[in-house]
Structures are given as C-alpha cells and as structure tokens.
Image 1 (cartoon, rainbow, N blue to C red):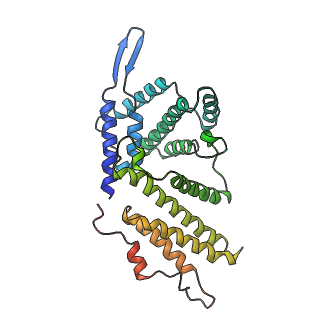
Image 2 (cartoon, rainbow, N blue to C red):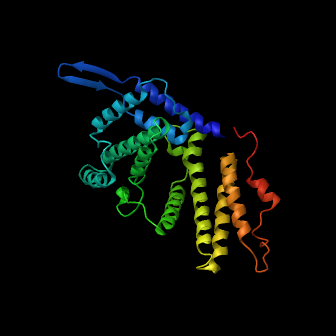
Image 3 (cartoon, one colour):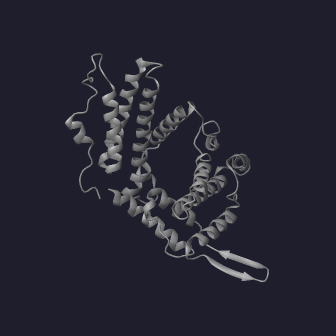
Length: 302
C-alpha cells in the first residue's frame, strides 16, 4: 500500500520538476526578466506532503531555481514575500479577503504557506538547519486556516501553553476528524479520478493519525489524574484504548510496522494500567490474541 503513496507523490514531484525546467531567464539592459509556468510550488509541496521520500536533487541548482520560481509565482499573484510573519499575514489577508473576495485571496494564501513548507523542508533535509526549519514549520502551522470564528479566515492563533496545550491538541484532532466526516472522500467530486495513493495520503493516513493523537491525549490525561482525580483514570485509559483501536483499524490501508508498533504499544500500556480493586487487570481491558492478530500489519505490505 505504501507504493500507492510514493507513486502518486513521485508523479507530482516529476511534474513539478518538468515545469521548473521551463523557467527561462532573459537579460536586458534595464535588468533581468523571468518566464515560468505556474503550479510548480504546488506540485513540489504536494509531493513532499504525500511522501517525503520522493524528494531528490537531480540538478545542482534546484534550490536556486525553486527560489526564483517562488518569486515568479508570488509576483504573478501579487502575493506576500516569505519574510512576512503570521500576525502581519492575518491582518493583510483579512483586508484582501474583504476587498477582493476568497477566490482572489485563496491562491495567495496557499502560495505563502507552501513556500514556508518547502523552505522548512529543505532547511531540514538538505542543509540540516534544524532551528530555521522549525521556525518555518511553526510559521506555516500557526498560519493555516482552520477555525470557525472568521469563516474561511479564522486561524492564525498562537499555540496554547502549559495545561491548555493538551486540550488544544485534542481540539485539533477532533476538528480534523469532524472535517473528514463533513467532507468524506468522494472520487466523483474530482475532475479527474484520483489514484488510491491520494486517498491514503490525504484521508486514511490523516484520520488514523488524528485518532492516534486522541489516544495519546487520553493516555496523558490518565497519567495526569492519578493523584488529582483517581476516579477518572480508568475512564481516560478506556477512551485511549478505544481511540488506539479505531486508529489501528486502518491497518488494511496503513500497513506500516512503525504505526503498528506505536498503536499496539499505546493499547497495551493503557490496557495494563486499568486495574481492578484486587490488582488484577480488568477482563475487558486486556488484549487478546485475536486483538493482536487484528492489529498486526499483514506481511509484504509493499
């Protein structure tokens, strides 16, 4: 199944490289002009978001060309420069939305977020500049649109701190699950029939990850309430088990050893922690051989 993801990602990456090769530079006495095709940044970032393993540098000047391509697309859309921060972006995006509407604002927002994604990715994978990569990912993460207060423009909020962070994580996971429920995968809604790798990368994998995050949340909440609210501990562990099991139910499509081990370890830990008064594990909390078999990834998962 993993071949579906990497296959679709490779097609996007190859298409992006093909378009990038059409970037032309012409020098005049007054300066230099560039001619390029649109959609390169979208193709490249779609590829690395689907499966980062497809990223490769076939030409030594790839990063230089991508920098030029990004500025060409920014100029075309009259967009924002990468140096803009989330706060300024929110203010200017709201202003553009009010004046020009969503159809004119959306591609500009998408481009700046994709620029940050690509910059952070290459900083991490190519130059190993992890602090800068972290800042790029933090910037685009806090700038993604995803709330409801301002409709399509609601996001751009700073991460919550301390104890609120766990609640924020749960809210994000539940928001993702609700969005997937409200907008289920429907191949008929696409102009062209997407392949199975698209479904895996942007629906199945995302839902399993959100469910696993819920499992982690309830597990941490159980640990945090051992002394404060011991009566809630078992309930939290039970919810954690339920979330881990539901996430693992996607093993027919997400058959990776790492995911299996993560989900199974979370399941086992939570099941072990639920104890009856006499110190023995509750019968409805222990993992059975059939449970383990159902969770286990199938061999030769491709």
